[in-house]
Figure (cartoon, each protein chain N blue to C red):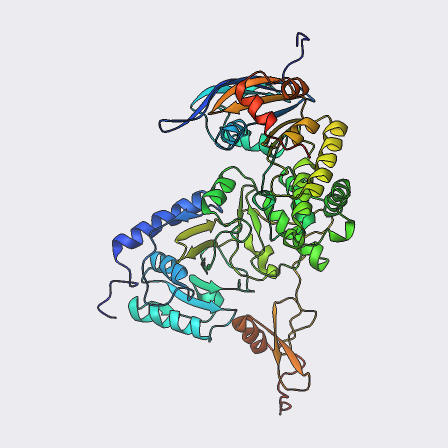
Length: 260
Length: 288
């Protein structure tokens, strides 16, 4: 990494404590444009805390999170004013929740869900919004005639795909994903991963994916961080870490996967 | 007169409400919290409007109450009596004679003047409420001017009904800043929100007061390809023949018979007194 490229996201020494307990600590990394970073670890290892700190949902107790904004270059999102941060989170950022229900408006039709971000950044032509919504539903393999159905009428896999469409419609540069395949059965997971991989490559997205599923990072992530007890214990290229784990915990993690 | 303090509320309470009103006028469309009092009527009957009226009334005022356009329905009669009893102010049914008008669901057809105050009763002051249930979040959205969600509601209308089906409580943007719920007036009345009179909105249960000062810009939200349309029933009034007023539809028999009459009763009777006639006006005897 000696090319003079500005990182899209640069994280320095981020720490978050819950009272005396460690949420996550000593986390530093750079994410470059077009790169997908996986964060794995068992539950309670601090990976969701870290993701929420990065995405601005939680305020870390120390450290800085620099994002390469379109206008001003690298800026610390933690010291940014709230309007700026919220503007980022509905334009350049996207957040895919583990449970689609957390990320969707269940009482609003699929089209309205996808269109919300467009309207939030000022789209005021109904026909354009609708055409774009239909286009995005098509890209996540939801047929056009479902555009006016509410998400409550969708299956779990479809809801998750709808959530992804809703997030990607404004062409974000950085996507945070919290266990995007959790709670889905394996065949649906496979299709979703396939779709995600296509979208990430096609749009040149950068993404940070939190998961405990090693198959997900193997398929999607370029680089990998392994977390345990709030600390990063190992980091490196995905294949390298998974094929030649150095840290005892990573070895345990890799060997715990059932080989069918 | 009676043993009540003038206009029922004590002076400190009226002072507190007046401060909220002044703040509301200073920030058009902003919902000012106030310590709403328990009133001798149930929530939903205009407790917010009554408190605002009480804070505005002076002994010289002439007071009018409108309920769905009419002066003679329960809500209008009881609130008018309430202030006759507790404030001893003059009351009137004529829009032009009133200085303070409390209204529910309508703006009078007669254009109001700079000498008048229009007080609205508001059930739910938050226009974003049904889209975003969290009050903390809606306040933040107002503060940061994040109003995309309001258009999601209009989008849903078009997707489901082919046009913007919201017919009352149609959201407006006040002075290019705050999105506001104009209380459940028909959208036909929305263009009249830009007027010469002071408009005050009181929500008793929700403890909010907001205001539109005179001659303030009020724009109804819409899409470029689905512009705002202040629609009305496509009929003239059957009693006074007016073609430019908001009409109530009244079923008059069980054979599909119906009539359309002005919802503003004062305006309609005034027109009839001026000699205007509609389809179902009583047949008059020829002049001698």
